[in-house]
Length: 123
Image (cartoon, rainbow, N blue to C red):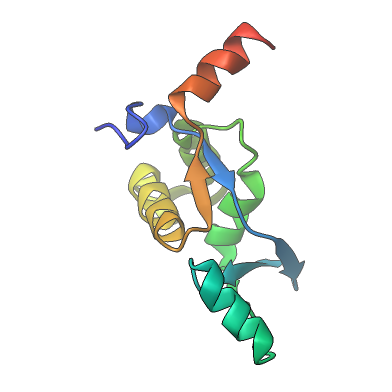
């Protein structure tokens, strides 16, 4: 299975796109309310918030804190399995579903294949 970047699923590297915070040991993401700039301007004009808070559970918080732009999905799955064991089995499926949900909300993206090549050439 390959992702949009053309890389096999296990080699894809997620990158965070939104500000976040921790509250009581859990991650809270600040997700844009709209993907259109004109909507953001309208929201600001009427003094409405341009972001919404999205609280993650224990497993989601664990994964989010380990997304560093270097770890691929395979290594994130291994970390998750080491920490939570049978609770997250199969870990690969859990990571895939979680990150697809975040990607659909435009909270993260994946490093492009070209970025990987540049990183290897210029460490």
